[in-house]
Length: 190
Image 1: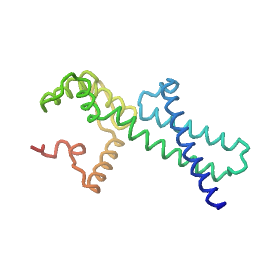
Image 2: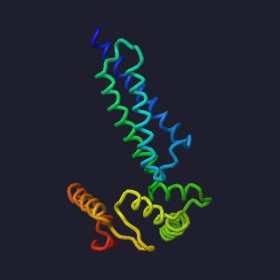
Image 3: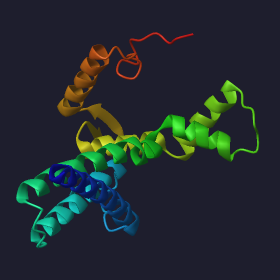
């Protein structure tokens, strides 16, 4: 019976810490304190690392007899993994996804039915042109070092080349269509 109690206490602690850290990450991101990082993905990872580290240090400093140092290491790892998984699958997807854009466009419109041409046009006009999707992505890639810019022209860096080669392997291993990795060598589907 004692071991069940210890197990349940540990599980409840992890659920509480994961929930509290996710909530705190959201508050930190909304506060604007990390807005010096222009790329939302990196800003979120920064927030996660700060929050998870602070909670872990707090756990180490609080005099809670049943929380040992190894428990804090486990808690740190669990919070880091859960927060990163949640952040990259929901907020980052909402920030970058063409699918989310199309669904949002359809939801915001007063219409109920759309042609494929109309949605394609909305994607190009709003997402690409009005929301400056290419400018935004190029700025991100320059910031990460995968693309360089000189006099309004852009080049793939060795780091960018290594990254696209890595993605080519991922596409191959998981048998994902190579449209985005090799857009010039893949024939469009009809």
